[in-house]
Image (cartoon, rainbow, N blue to C red; front, side, top):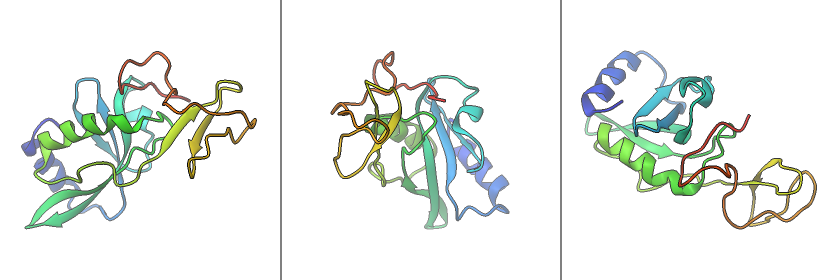
Amino acid sequence: MGSTADFSAWGVEQARADLTEPITFVVGMDGVLRLASRRSAHAAHADEDVVLSASEISFGRAADQRIASEVSHQSTGYCPDVTSRAEVARALNAVMPHRPSGFTHKVLFRRCPDCQEHNIVRENDFVCAFCGSDLPATWNVDPDASGPRVTATR
């Protein structure tokens, strides 16, 4: 999806589909938004490539236009940082007039430095659910990433 026209054409194709459930998305390294069924894996429609963000998006309607009503970054395959919201915002701005100002559901992902397992931090409890070690305060899932780019974790 590189433009409003691309998004409109996709919306026409999806008109018969049930868009009441979220759609999976990735933002590729080219900044382009890619959408697929919720049942598809993020890595599959990213061609197993590095991405700027990945998760799910929900759509609604306003003034007879389809809009992004909810956007998250909860991808357990990529575990993107909350900072990837800027990349998602840029990609959404290119294809639709209205979107949330940020992620509507924020998740903190951390990789345990001791056992290397990926964790979701809940209630600011930065403790590994697998081995009990302390988790870092800053995102560390992809140690080779510079900025929000992430590779699939599985």
